Length: 550
Image (cartoon, rainbow, N blue to C red; front, side, top):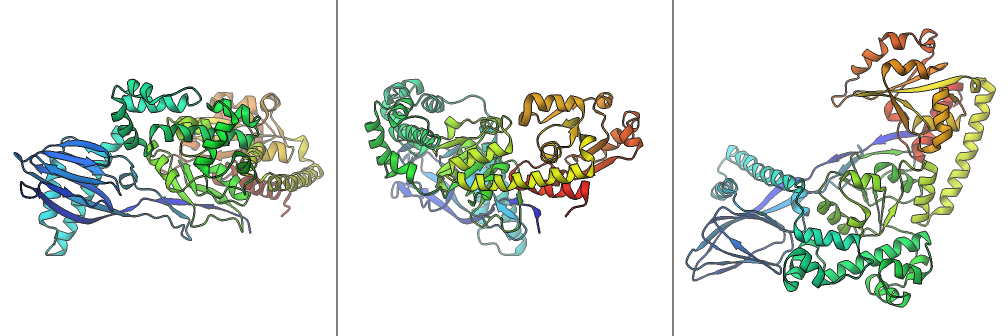
């Protein structure tokens, strides 16, 4: 039995693993920090320095610092101002398991950051950690519950600060230099030039760069070039020499050396390798394409964890979901942690989150699959080419083509091919007439039903790129057809009350299809998703709708 499933995502469960009070005095001026977990450090009094990996940071009263897991960190006091700090180790239980209800886990913002987060003056956090320390052994359940509330108030405070920082418009000089490298990796780039751009010394620049990215400038540049070379190899875009010049290397021999240093294989070996196993998709419909081709995405980055499924094609425990509103650093870290070999994305969706292929390329090669510019069949072909499963895609498309031919033959026998059909979508803030995508693909292209004249002209002109046209209620008469299909999108509260104004209006009731009771109401969830799995399900439903054939 075919079905559509939904996957909801859960946020991590945070736990206060351990809280400590550390005094640095003349007899014990240095304390090494245990950073097996993410650690929040708050300075209660005194002055000193934090030695974190290769960096050095001044500590002062009221300061709070979030230290990433596995950091090399110790504190040293100013002997004239003995240092007193509290440290709170934070662990998470990440819900990465996909349950029978279709639940996928989100990655923790607080514990997945790869760089230190510094809060210059947070006396409230200091006071909260002091209270947690004093009552670390609660005498009764009410105190235990108060500790839990206090702990989550600390986390909330930090999250709000971090999210505000992600939205800031002023890009620090270091980040500007990294962005320059990402966009100009095929040109001659030196650490000296980047450090001048950042306004710091060459040696300090290298230290800061590694703190921000986890790589040296040369390693980062090499990753950008080799990953771009992989993208071009996947596409078959030129000879090895041509690819070398495109990515910034002087010849194919130098590219081959760098390629093997980074990947352990030659460029020719890469093109002959087994199909990809660890793929990330940015945009849920692309996940359905990948799953159809027999590969479960390791990571889905999207605003929704919805996915379509048929019997025998289900998400597994290996699939993770990350919201596309996550910070760029969190997305990059998740991609690195999942050992992603390829990211499948459309620039349109990356741009919505202030990203581009160039800003993710150091993590993995990017297979850019245009969204609105192509139809779902071309999406499938390009994705199949990228993950080396073209034969499987063509077999599936050939089988689906036979199903479409059979469906059109049944429609022709029914005599419906001579009648016109309009698809009206009612959203809380707009009215749309659908074109050649979503349910429009199945009705007009798979079944061969006729759209109204204006829609037919746009489909003729734009083909698969024609998604919809937005109209005013008074314009509805210009799209009148023998049949009207209505799909209502509920508002954010789940109400469809906004549709009543449309369906009770004179403009609506004056349509011939309304007067002859030729109105069909369809469910958004079943008819709007645009991917091969959903389109095939829609074709089956459409045949039952018009002909009664199962």
